[in-house]
Image (cartoon, helix red, strand yellow):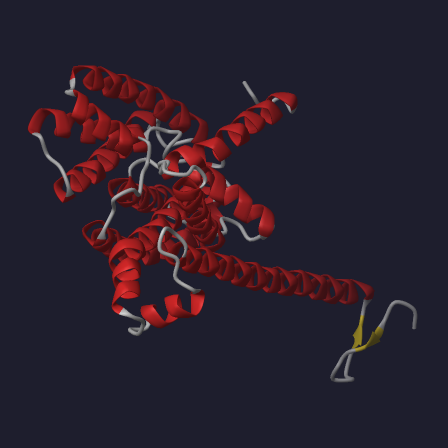
Length: 364
């Protein structure tokens, strides 16, 4: 009989529509298997590259430690000189680079996916500027420094992010409105920072400028522990809240029709993304373009995987680690802030993105 065949149980024939549906389901399953396999493979490569960059950062410097000795020291062995150099001097900075990159990468992935806008990242829409303004004002007016200043930076980023959300609210929040409001607030805060810098003492202004550049220079264990605790709380919460992202990507009406609580889920995701950006900024300053660059790189590596949160976090960690290593060793006798190195990479990408948007008629 044309267009029919026996069912697997041999009781009833399968028609052509049934066969087409089975073939389509098989193709979808095959595509999903390939996507999962690629995700696992890319994640493994990224983790291996990040581990290599981490070990290289621990071993290379004025006092070079061979890789076997680095591994031995990390597990409690090694001679006293290696333990001091690696554990006390280099390990806090290397861990901080990984954590900062991870938090910025995941934060940028949430912002860009949720708002469906490639410009939506905490350093572009003003969240990082809020942290910078809070630090400059608190340092200049009250003389705060050290760990208390980190909490001021976190509070500044959260308050700024909340203000941006409230000002962008018009019966809901759209991506372009939030980005435009954030750009406006960020420019205003940058002006406030510039004004305060002109009034500060030379030493205070120099320290503030170094922090505003995004720097890991001189960081030690007191900066690592708060970031580690914050990341241990916020990363799982972000992954949990991100279960609503596939529905929210379809638009508010479609997401509501699928049963999603649109505004509640959006607020939870934005709060997690702001928190991640805030704790990273508090630890290292506003390291530019990491949250902007990591998500699109990750999405190109694992297409069809939605927000790609974990690959974005891994790309961010690798990017900051490599940029910090380059900042330490590219120029002899000079340590560049990691934010300067990432900006050298990110600024051309931003210009390319804007030029590409204009070519396809989306530049406004």
